Amino acid sequence: DITYHDSEENAVLGINALISPYTNTNNPQSVYARILNSVSRCFVSARIDLHVTDIGIITPSDFQNCSIADLPFGISEFDLTSKIPEILNGLNPNNYNFSFHLNQEHAEMNTNSLSTSFQNTVPETQQIIVRVEEISTQCVGFVPLNLIIIPLPDAFDTSLFQCDEDGIPEGFTNFDLNQVFDDITGGAPNRTI
Image (cartoon, rainbow, N blue to C red; front, side):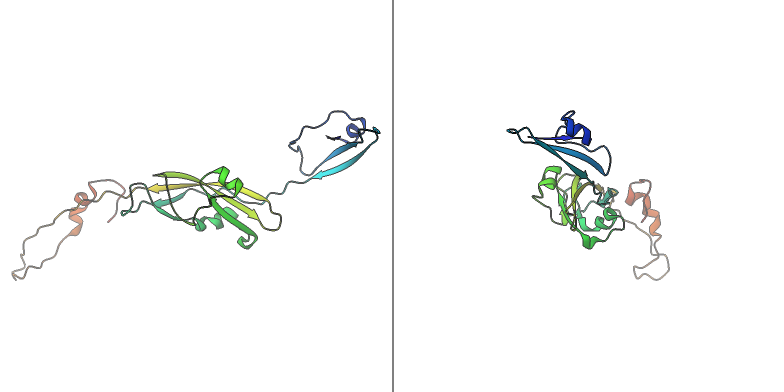
């Protein structure tokens, strides 16, 4: 029989056994195993040093991309690898493996990874999960990546007519293109042409 304890004294006395799985309360932390021979009832204790390694990744800012006119509304294409430097926050990318997944389960199982050139499958807003594995420790971290599709601004076709008033009837004249600004934009604010 093996039991685990938060102190060597508790292990020797065989009291206050920890439940596994166990969440450490300090980093690093020592816990103690009590190994009991169930026939002879003799036991020995052993120390287990628990260390939690943080791989140092951060959750990136939302990945915003404009909608693409040739695709259905709210759909765009994303180069997912362009967010890796932000996720690593200055760490060396050669020390990590990356994959992108539609959900946490796929990321944890490391299955069904997405192409790094990804076209969102949920219009307007979609969250995917980035799996990051530190090569030397084989520690794995997961961060969400929000894909936000910005709608294209409305644009309206219009015509601009002007008289040929320069005295030379060749069909050419100067146009003030800015006079159709409101016609093209529908008068929407925050637009430039």
